[in-house]
Length: 299
Image (cartoon, rainbow, N blue to C red):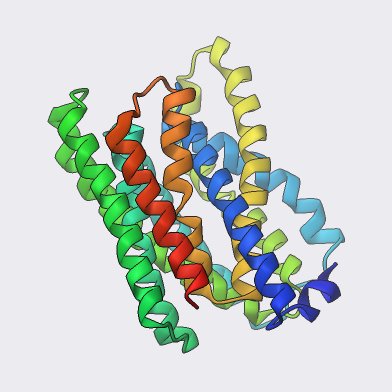
């Protein structure tokens, strides 16, 4: 599998596969956010997910994939720090704001910054029409956030701090997307990066939330563990897909396509969480999708 993926780098087949992987990551990322934002404490939901994917990744990291090259250990350390900051900010965002308000802000902040960073780090160049696509997508996402902010009345006293944390979280999304794309390109086998990343990354949140677990009602433990296992599989396919996409093709294009997750998030909020969509949100979601399509096919 690794040799086959590496052989596709820089080819049209690799570009097409990266497109499919980025769209799959978009849907699964929205599902992942809904799992963390659901009826449980977002800190404990994230802890259950992280501990699950840490334990599941360990045997693959230790006994299946090739061991990381020596230069990868500092890269893993950097990834651990960046993702730890991101997770803390994300949990603080989700504990303060409605899902359909804060999620678009998080996802809207990330793509433009990621495209800029990809240009600096990887030397990626984009056509004028692609920049227009990015602008359309970001406008749609932030427009959706503004509309939600104006129409949603629940927890309005916490809305401003929730939005501040959402913007900061979006900045960390751009940081980890660019950094991890560099990391997965730095190792010979991409699955080595993924297996070791999940094992290392899954330690932080369970460690800092252990006191919350001690106060959790007994009846909530099993449902939370089930959510954690489901979330772990979603994380594998979501994060794994976007990381492989950034190795196969341009980082910026993959990151922008992933932000169509906002459309999926709105649908999940409507169908699963009981939040209303309506014609304005539908139009804004169409704008988001249109910007992503323009970014992809204008290249």
